[in-house]
Every structure is written in C-alpha cells, then in structure tokens.
Length: 305
Image 1 (spheres, helix red, strand yellow):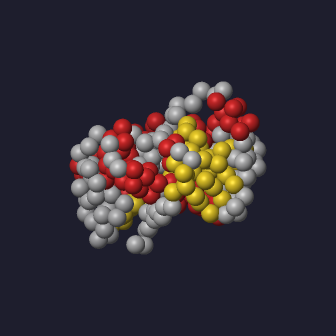
Image 2 (cartoon, rainbow, N blue to C red):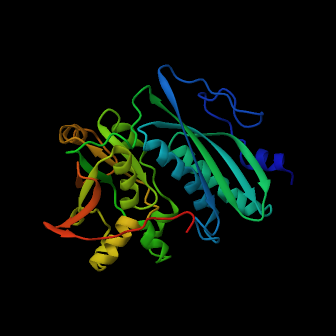
Image 3 (tube, one colour):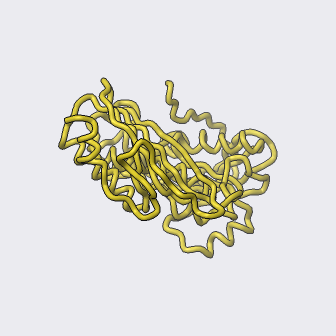
C-alpha cells in the first residue's frame, strides 16, 4: 500500500467547519478567530523510549494527541487541530486501524481536528504530533510569571504513570496509557494563574522550569502532594520519588495568588486541585513535611539519559 493510500484509508476524515482546508493538499488552511493568538507545540514519541514496544496501538494513538493537548492547555489556550508525522517500520493494517481510532477518539473528546501531516518508512516506530490552539491576545500563561506569595497548585494526582510503568497490569496503567489533558482547567486559569506548566518530566523538575524562568524559589509541603491510594502504601521515599520525579502525569502545575485562587474555587472544574506549596523570593526548591525540612534530590525524566 502506498503512502497516499494509508492517508486516505486511516487519516482522511472530514473536518469540522472551523478548518478551511485539511488533509489532502500541500498544506492546511485555517482562518484565525478575531483577537486570537496562535499557540503551537510539538512532541515526538519513539517506541521503546517513550512507550513499551508492545503497547496497545489504540493507546499510542490517544497518547500521541493527549501529550500535545496538555502543552496547549498549559498555556491557557484552547486546542484546535493537530498535524501527524508517522514513521513506520512496515505497514500493519490492524495496527494502523487501532492507532488511528485511538488518535481520533482523543481528538473527538477534546474537539480537535487532524488537518495534515506525513507518513514514511523508518527502522523505528516514531510519531511526531504538532498541535495548534488559540488564546486571547496577550492572555497566554507562561512559565515566567510566578511571584513570591503565589500558591503552588497541581491538578489531579501525581506519580501514577511512573508507578504504573513499574507495575504493568496495575489499574493505574490507564493513567500511563491514556493520560487526560487538562484542557478545561487550562482555559479556566486564563486571567487567574500567574504561571503554568504541564507535568511531563516530573513535578519537581517541571516546577523547577517555572522557578528558573520566573527567577524565584519555592517550598513544597510533602504531606500535601496528591497521590493515589496505591502509592500511599509505599514508604515516604518511594512515594515522593514517584510523585516528584516520575513524569508522564500530564497534570497542570500552576502558581496563583491567594485572591485568584478563591476566584478559581468558584468555577466548575472537572478535576481536583491541590495546594502543594508557596513561591518565595529565595531561589531554589526546598521541601517540608509537617513543619520539618527535608533534604531531597530528584532527577526528572531525561530524554538523553
């Protein structure tokens, strides 16, 4: 089967009215909504590096979209569409059918269109997705706006995906294979949060990016980390390792003033929020549990380890 037959068979679904021209031409065409900025991000997933080689292709399709929508959400933006670059060792129709279904299932859940991309042959299964979204001009939430006195918050629970990777078959594996991008929360935080990042490489490492960009420090309350019951059964050191350095959570970590946090509580949110610490002027990330300082050193996910 030729490249264009693969595209026509698995990736050429009719798009919504918000797409002027989608799959099938040299490029896609979109008309930006009035007073909106375009938000763009890209992520690459490599078999054996970012997911086990025998992962369900439906899950791979879902995750390839979800991790990009998480980046869009982390800017306070609304996702609109994606581009897919797919490199395959060989043509496997059962794999392609399940993968494309997973991709479209995630697109449908979050109102996103596949508008183009590329397919080719490669020794290794590799997927690169580019996501596009819109945000009101000047309203994107970046990493550089954290202020001393801000509350540090995180959505959902952290550490589940890393725990699942070490306990395949556990119910938490769904959190590894089918992450939920927090699109509704990201949009709700527009004009409220001062800084934000999605938790992809570990909470401590990703929060560190906010601290560096904002030139501030932070103190985290270890007893306030939101973790699942399965992790509560572990020793403190084990559960903190998963929660702070595990990665692949795709929750949102954000900083927000106490006043705006009260405004956030008045909104109807689709995921729980936990306050896990506070931004402080002294640089560095420190940890405390029940009023006692803890010296911890964590290394998040390293793409070139």
